[in-house]
Image (tube, rainbow, N blue to C red; front, side, top):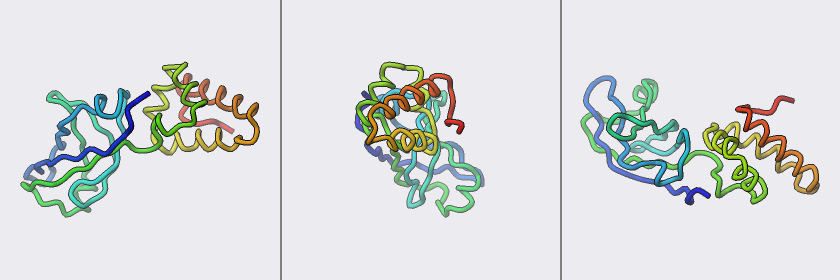
Length: 158
């Protein structure tokens, strides 16, 4: 199981210019939140909310707010800001034991699930959790979802 997902905060200096570059992330998200192919995060930069992904750079890791975020948020250039990031959406530690065990048994499905946007993970979880009163149906749905995830399907087609 991945370690419990806790927010991480750090201070960053915002570059000067009309289009600031990426903001360096001074930690390895795989070490802090557990290994994933993509770390989707949410949090704040200064006092403004932000959602996106932590990506690997030549010198480590970074986040890259887009032009619309910079336009809409009044973060002064050449300033130090507090950045707080946390994994977005349900994490492995948040999952029901039966579904977590099924993902653990199928690493390809688990890795794909971990990289999905929270919209997709929550839809899968709602589909499984709608069967709490029917253990047989729940087991069937977990098997179905794990199969879909293993095949790289972001969502279940009705």
